[in-house]
Amino acid sequence: MLKYLSTRNIKNKVKPSLAILNGLADDGGLYMPDDLDLIKVDYQELIKRNYLEMANIIFQIFFPDFTSTEIKKIVNDSYDHKFDNKLITPLVKVDDSYVLELFHGPTGAFKDIALSALPLLMKSAMIKNQIDHDILILTATSGDTGSAALHGFSDIPKIKIIAFYPKLGISEIQKRQMTTSNGKNTEACAINGNFDDIQNNVKQIFQQNPNAALSSANSINIGRLVPQIVYYFSAYQQLVTAKAIAINDPVNFIVPTGNFGDIMAGYLAKIMGLPINKLVCASNQNDVLTEFFNTGRYNKDRAFYQSTSPSMDILISSNLERLLYLICGVDNTIEYMKKLENNHEYTITKTELAKMQETFIADQRNDQQTMITIKNVYDHTHYLLDPHTAVAYGVYQANHDQLKQNINVILATATPFKFNKVVLEALNIPSQNDEFINMDILAKNTAINIPISLTNLAKKTIIHHDEIEIKEMAAYVSQRINQHE
Ligand SMILES: *Cc1c(COP(=O)(O)O)cnc(C)c1O
Image 1 (cartoon, rainbow, N blue to C red):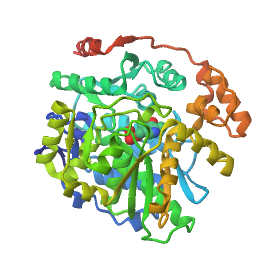
Image 2: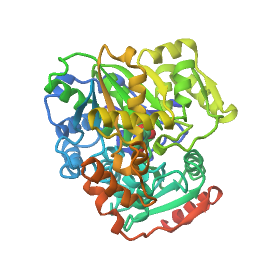
Image 3: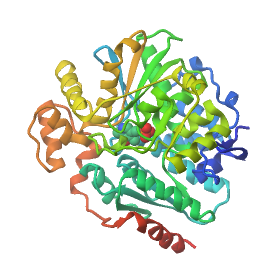
Image 4: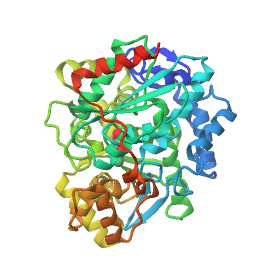
């Protein structure tokens, strides 16, 4: 049966339900399947099925200690009637490429796809492992994870969740989705720091409290990654159905990237057997990954930009450790992670880099270029991109020569209404300071409907007002751990 090993110790194995509950391995590594042969699928058979059926099969492959009845219920409760599109992740033709819309869930960003399922996977895993104490989930968020996680975990029994978000650099809508979360078990807290500070602190809190019932809803959790694999297959299926490709034609995916979770799910889909040619890692001005994939050097000592695509404002892309493990092996992964901690940088070998470059291309777009992309694409096609998706679209256009031999799919990770101020500015439409008024302005000017999930937000009561310093996080958490005993 498939188990999960740590990227820092291949002997440290746990069963899938425990990998989901633990989030991070106790040695600080990330969980990976211990036998990649066990995740191979007959993709041609798989893509004959609808989204929910594909999710069923993929979840069953990665989480074999859940029964098929349990998986079926989890998948149904996650996706059936929770998304405003029957296909869950519809594919739209835009100019000479395709856009895969991942934002039809309850909070308008792609994180809903994983965070609709993770809480239910955890709940089921707790029962399976006879865990009867409460678990506290700590989430570092650059905006979208927090809102999707608070929504997904809302009123799940025996699980509590705190979302820590940076006080500056997230949109009013993202913030409002968190501060109005009204689950009995949900909390949101603003931190005076950036996402990397918060993520590092959450990691430290885990290491300082090895015996506490803590877990993570961040994309380091394998229960987050697996649901994201499904839409790569869905995209391929929709391309085949539309006769845009023939079976076995390789496809490129262009992925707006931050923590390297979304694109890592694509790499797993490729390992499973989906014909993927290139995975294009698109970054904003926080281009640490662009440098990495082009030179082999990962250097986190660089200026941190607060960009117009805040969910990608990340200098330490945690999920990259999974790729390092696959390409460089466990010993080098340990060495690189140590170097990253102590020297703030590491460089992989030329051979390792060449191996990565067989699949990965990386490039970046700054805010100004991204604004132009939003405007140009809208003017030419009437398709409206959010700033994150526009980064990917811009990278696609800039690398067109290298990509044009294949069909290209750009992953659209958020609805433009969630980041309306930037989108209005890009379109040269006067905006206001109130993002809720801006939603209406954007809808009127583009004749595109505001997603239902966002229309009621302005009326909801703000419940969570906490705001603390980075150094206060550990104490904030320990207060809540103690309450659980
Ligand atoms: C989280 C997020 C991303 C980045 O995804 P990763 O899995 O962290 O690489 C991109 N766009 C949006 C809108 C997001 O919320």
